[in-house]
Length: 553
Image: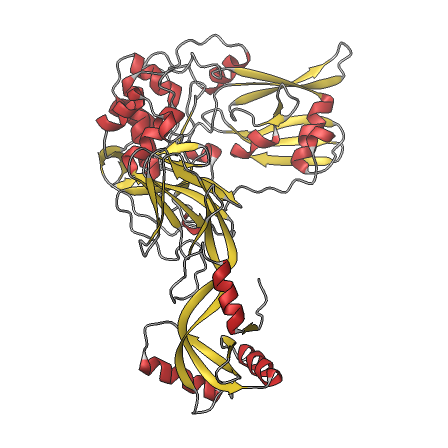
């Protein structure tokens, strides 16, 4: 927090400051802006706000066509930009001329008296300043400030408060005064170096084409606003259906999976997720992010005719359960059987029930058969059996496993002597596991296991295990001594809800998008419905504290 300081203003200094600020527009009197996200939740009116740059010290914005930048709220025109002209937006404390109502308590020729009155006024909680009046050869001292327009009744009440605090007498008078103040502002810097200030978030509105945030293009408008952490967020606001144009192809690539009914199922799932999560990040000024933490959103460049057609063909349709929007979870591939919500997460959700991801009559006999197939794959009946992660396996040396479990425990653990699966769900997912080490036994649960039992990728970096559908095997040498571990698994993702490649497999057999969705989400209905934006609180960006680094072990 910046400390309050005494502001002393000479007329000469005022003139010099005005000369230095020719490129900066004068700010009219107003309550100083904080610049942070609005505390009031804006009702959803068909446009979604995506934090494509969740946190940065500066954000570059522009458009590939001519555009205007307007101040949010007032709609004041800040500047006009040419095609491909980029602006750098920062947040800073700058000197701006502010016209407001000030309560003059004295005009003194004593600088000591001036300084003491200002200090006393500030200590009493009143904005205080002074300016030198050459014609009277004295310093006007102001204790107290109100915004324009003039409100005589409110000024009378305010003056009484200043008098009661011992900072003024009944002779004090209100005056309309323009003084420079150090205030926080959005600073828009053009390529020429010219700068424009804005008290509220600047919004880029293209006349033609698309906006640019960073290096990516987007439909709709671009906005730069402060997030909950006080840094800047680059926000793309656009109609919901146009947002989905940039989501569906990133979540289910149409070039690889052009099946129309699978694309439609993905469109409905993505639309449902978006409506159900409106306002999830409202404390940061937007609804959702653009990554796998919400939904992957690639903007205009990601759009593809196949996925756009799927969005248009299902316009407005969402999945509901008992009339409420569902949490439309989806993931890459199931390994042949989806999971119950409680297998991987904390709660039981009635529409997230585990089902065989295979045509009727081609399911395996049960969970034991599924686990056996993980180790020795032979089943060809799964809808998503063509996916590279339908079956997978990884191996660790003893040293690598010590490193990985040490990373989980956040300290060196020595040798990992055993890995025991303590509990497994009816759908085959590991729900509890223990790692028995020289330093003690460590237990992990449900989907978090994918992180604690990380595999070592080709670059030697611990990487999230594809799923919790797996079996563990000890590796030994000829003498029976432990040399490492192997894991044999199936699926990629948490496993609850829609399996994307399973949806492709179903579409290839002639199933329609509504049949696909109802197969993965038990008991749902499909209808036209919109969500309600909530006052969500989410982190500005993912953070983690990890005092033990596996890669250096």
